[in-house]
Picture 1 (tube, rainbow over the protein chains, first blue to last red):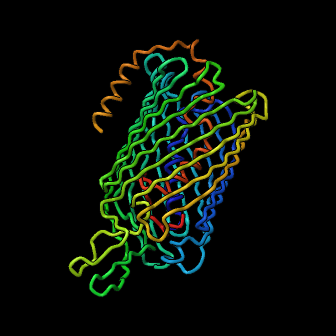
Picture 2 (tube, one colour):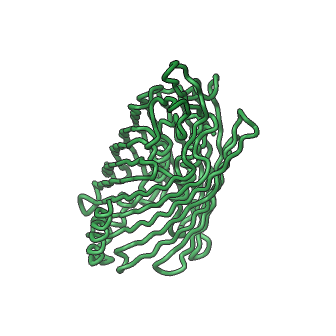
Picture 3 (spheres, rainbow over the protein chains, first blue to last red):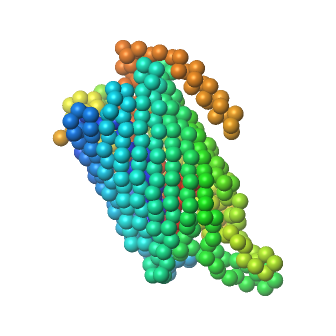
Length: 369
Length: 69
């Protein structure tokens, strides 16, 4: 369960980045990512993948990802377990893409993830079609599947949740150096959306005594998001390219957020590129989130959570990426990518920890074979 | 919000009139302009954001766990 966020987010991302079209080359890749923060959390994520063309119109890809987490977060120590944690998660995904028309392709992908107290399965279906003489691309992507939540503390505990997400992306060529993307997304989840480990302290205003009760959140959550992104080459040779994006999200728990990001990619030589990314995020709180809960007329509030991500928050992310082409050919040879990032998170209404600073690093290698 | 979406759709509708010829696409085809120039890096970054931010909503807010990550 400690890994559940990583599990589902990885599934979401894996599906979201599934190949829209069959690959035309055999390619293998491997990466290693490390995250560490001042809350004593370290996450090491190795991954490997392969993509293969099958005939002229079919492509296959598969990947495996592991997460190894160690830590002694303030949440873990005070709320769930008196000892530091160490957990592992394994995720396996495989998919096919089919170019069924000169201008259209579809894809099917399945991803499974398991850990000792959380299992997830996702099915991803999608297609894209090129319109207006290749100037407009429409991509429709559905992903859904069940989660199964258990607990190492209580062997009898078992809850389920079903997730659905539908995203439509329209990409338009605006001029010979510019793309504009418009993505709209709807999400729906039904079932258990709390944590079996998290308890909420409730204060009795008469006695000032605290009682701890299990977290309780609504069973259904519906969300929607829209994102606009501009990708533009500053000059015709694309020695400098800019990606600028904005995303707005809102859901029926009254959480809304604004995300803005800018990435600049510069060719520092014929074989090297340097990218710099700045990202800012601002979020409001869920309507039932409170920093501290009290008994109301002697009763425990029906909805209560100690999930910091449901409170107000903001974050910043600054990153640098260095890309080295080691083999022959600008885009098809052996490629090494190094990335480092600094992150800051602020939760002003989360009393146990209002700020967290982190660093992350990724090393990625890919090569045709 | 609705007006924003309608406005964006109108922008795209007019943009659909744009015709960039195949021989004008050399710059557009460069990797620097692709949606995800560094997929492994993006995968990790998005992953990191989604486990700490509450706006992934219906799909991304799984369980919640201990809040340790």
